[in-house]
Length: 215
Ligand code: AMP
Image (cartoon, rainbow, N blue to C red):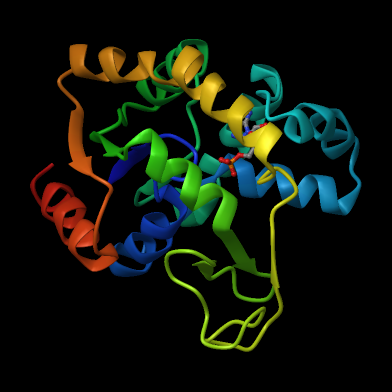
């Protein structure tokens, strides 16, 4: 199952990606997670990526395409994957198509998680992530039982550096300008499936899973 979760920041790609990855035993591959790991490790790549990430801008295509090329060649990705946060512009989508067509393994479906702008803002400003297990909460919409701690593993919850108001508005603008054109790009390939990303998490998972089962 070679798939992409497409959607604005805060549309639930990460949340759905984790659940669907477990359900289908295929990896969720998030360029945002790979980049944050590189920044934390202090690698050269991380140093190059950090300023763009802090500003809510896109990291250069060369860097993210290189990361994806390497990650897709790993053994756990040979039966499929869920891409989350990649591609984010037309050149990245073209590079991905090119890479996959050389392998004879084109994408099978792209799921657009559709969420209204106001809700995205609320989700992004309230988002908190567990530093130990990665579980995602929201102080406005789905708070943890004990403030600041994860329900599942009691790990500490933190706010992502780029979830502050200024960076959020830039990330949403970057999405509109550079990523939203991918909707038309994949529609032209007859690979786009639109799902409402508002409402109950399990209902959204079921809707995406129903699409995964028929592509
Ligand atoms: P995310 O976790 O997907 O919201 O990504 C966090 C940040 O990482 C983004 O705001 C970008 O700065 C960077 N990033 C993640 N994926 C990409 C990508 N495919 N292309 C360029 N930059 C990316």
